[in-house]
Length: 318
Image (cartoon, rainbow, N blue to C red):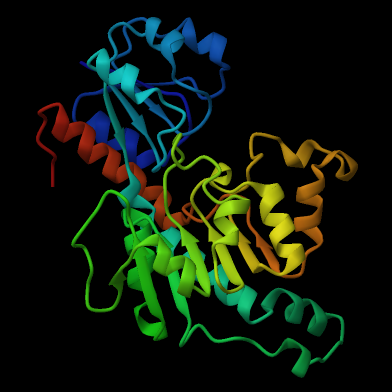
């Protein structure tokens, strides 16, 4: 019987499916890292979201570990190279929340372009401004997309009905264009985009990808959408570009300094750049929830269950 340790909470369907197939499941979700390290003896599987980093020290305490399952897409909190060097399989479930991220990105964009946040607040205050809240259509705009993985491809697919020109760049893929979008290069995206959406993992290569020099290469003011990882965008450079009008608006589900517990900080303790984003009318902010719908929560666990069961040779019951 394979012993699987749940370090983070996930949808219960994952535990149910593993239990049905003979896995022994234990929960240590309330423990800190030090406590967890003392309980890894005999553990063969780990289920985690983002509670803490699984690094060399962690792996040294889990000598019987066979797999690490990440409920979600990003793997930056796992030392995948070191784990795989030790024969530990790393599994994630980006297929489970890709539709949620695509819908959320479009929702934020519509909210920004049509002034929905401000207009809703004004109407509730008895303020009736029509001309001042005139919106801008997606139709006819050029949308640049960086990254054509799970979320990027779903975002592009969901844009089909908006009659926009869609340019997609992926450094590691070629020949993926479909009839409703163009496979592009960065020069074309810089020259022609009105809107830019980021769909890349956080790696050494993408850390602060969007910085001052990157932003200045755009020929037109553009709207930035980031539903990937906060540190893909250098916040100080984003804020400066918003102030100068180089970036006409931003939709941010993720922030560079997300490790800070904002709900426990007084407003005067917040970073100055974040304070600016809070008061900017042309910025839409959400707390890293793009991929966190009721449906995606379940789907991510279902997909992890299938991958774990298939990988370890147990037939999935239907």
